[in-house]
Length: 319
Image 1 (cartoon, rainbow, N blue to C red):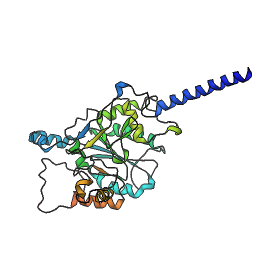
Image 2: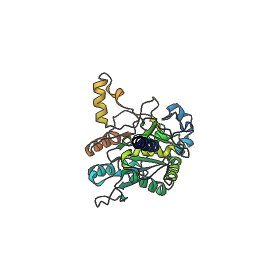
Image 3: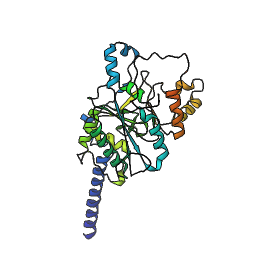
Image 4: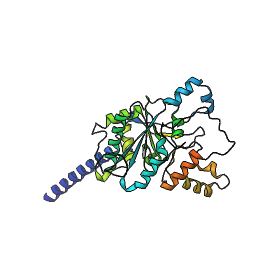
């Protein structure tokens, strides 16, 4: 009898542990049954407008659009990446309409917003909340790492006909199980409405916890996607008019090298979009070279006949 009772108790105990584990998995792992059928989402592709679409707009509409697309850049840095930090400040970030440099600890080298937070996810949450509270009239938010190089004018072109009062959340679309998310290393774009919903859900510890168990810890980009999902905002892929992705999680040098191996007869076409927004994994020296190629070098006699122009903020010396 004692042996049978002991086996029964062991079975009850194991069953309880199994149910507990399933509950924990459902709360943190994408693709488990916490996702309802109502939540299921087939992402669509956010494409840059075609020349034909732009030509249909009046000059007044074009001028209005070119002036109202303004971007707040959220640049996440750490003192140990000081040279990358310096390169980002000296190059592409000057083309943001406003930027906030958010650091994990105080640094005397550059001005930055010290969040005094070591945890990556908590620091990102605090940075996004600060950006939302201090953006003023800006309605688009771009989140980047210090190893990212961004062409802000191409980002504005991609967003040109999009409404920031709609919940856009885009970049390089990735998938983990059933969860679709935007890759952090390719840059993350949020509309005002998307960030407003995100800041609101930050206050709900059940849907968007600030601290999660170390056993099931996810990367910041996946945690961000899970929190946004609860607000009805889903990840979308940024593309040019030909369907080619414009957010890159690798450097231009790596992409060209891969294309040379995979597309030796058409290297540039096989590499990346002409309207690329980001490249990642860039060294400080490579960022300076990119700055020269993107903003300084002009092949004489070539005119791309762009129907509008995005000018850098006053005080930018990169054009």
